[in-house]
Amino acid sequence: MGALTLTHFLVLGALLFATGVLAVTLRRNAIGVLIGIELMLNACNVNLVAFSRYTDRIDGVVYAIFVVMLAAAEAAVALAVVLHVFHHAASISTDDYTEMKG
Amino acid sequence: MGTGDGIGIQLAFFAFSALAVGSALLAATARKIVHSAFSLLATFFGVAGIYGVLGSDFMAVTQVVVYVGGILVLLVFGVLLTDRIPDEFRVAKPRNYLPAVVASGLTFLGLAWAITGTSWARLPHVLRTPAEAGPTTERIARSLLTDYLLPFEFSSILLLVVLVGAARVARGGTR
Image (tube, rainbow over all chains, first blue to last red; front, side, top):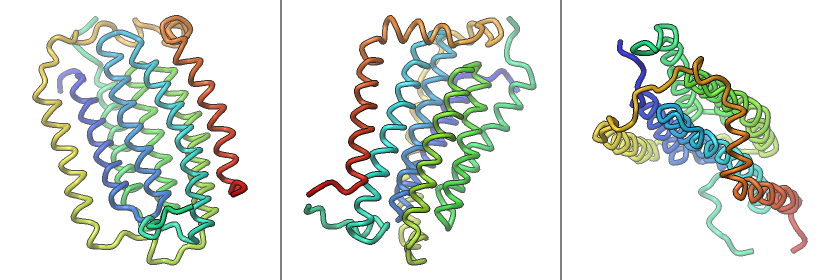
């Protein structure tokens, strides 16, 4: 085994991202879709931190911190919307969210 | 510095990667959404370990505090609050499997093609080991309060808006 290279971390990020895509497309539960989105955000954070390490600049980590902040905000808002729609439509399945009229 | 990372670091990388990817796959395919949410816990710890391998101590701690302590708790709350689900909605329909696997497989192949096709030779190999670079917290703080001050302030406004907005939306609003 040689040393760890940037490619190792990028491939790990790609694997996590593809898993997130799998969760988003496979899940019929709206919360499952949110889980997939969190996986994808984690995947890009892995990439950002890896680039930060391999360029020896701190900017990548700063971007990753902004992504974490956005992920927290996104989870809070998305969960509020899901709960609201759940009370409205009495279902958590994304297939039932066909009507978007207020 | 030497030619590369020690064998311990490499083993840690592969162990944490296996933990993260394996539990992520479980999170994507578990039959019950509760299992999915809890295997996401292992994914977050695996990714935190990867940050540790990368020598990014602050990100590793942030990952555990924000994702495990915040987002995961939020997701579990969501699962528990939407518990009254008929069983057939908990599992994907079998006819959904093929498109989902094709979509994620194509995503991975495209990313892998781009990663392996790019010449990373212009990036320096590893300039400093984590031990030589030291803790990252001070550099992050300096960067946030100088170069990234405007986005930093905007993010505080965004968080305030999210706080108010999420509370209002979740309560159902007043039509």
